[in-house]
Length: 269
Image (cartoon, rainbow, N blue to C red; front, side, top):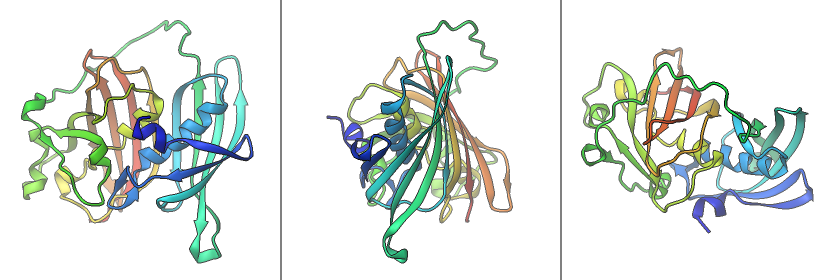
């Protein structure tokens, strides 16, 4: 079993809509579970209950900081039609500061569709970003407590890496390549992870911040990739009163747009 599949798995608990899970240590940023991984954990649970097996949209609100360890997932069907099926999912973990009573960490809404239906319109008003060849890009190395990069190959375009040596750029932009180190077919859950696997784009213009916690994130799945490597770009245009947006695009090597994302986060320089 692929490590990602092992780590987003769950087991039935009190009812089919209540599941037990483990928040793995293998997808962490500075010792904390990656937000995209947490979304994937919930997405997998929703997909198991949905009659429509293709996720189109997932939006998550990060309420409190999750930690590696035991968790409970609570699911709720909220709408169904001939075109869409929607679920709400909550991730809860024991709160040591409150007698280990469960505390909600994330709440998400997922929208599922039947992608086998005919696509009547496929219009793109922009194309994939221009990214340097992989041989010229910088691989994010192994770092203690940043276990996400032990699982993923992330290559940053040389135009974006000045911040690593104190040379800040004019644009808050990161672009580059990504894939699983251990090959795995792509699905919606994996695209949720990838949409949150690059360093924050604000680093390019502001330098490395102490903390950039996600408040809300939405990912739209447009297609499943046809290549192992994905070409990605993430941009931040506004940082206001400690809040920023980060808009992302994920493309495969055939030039197909596979996902778009928007993340709202705090910036603490």
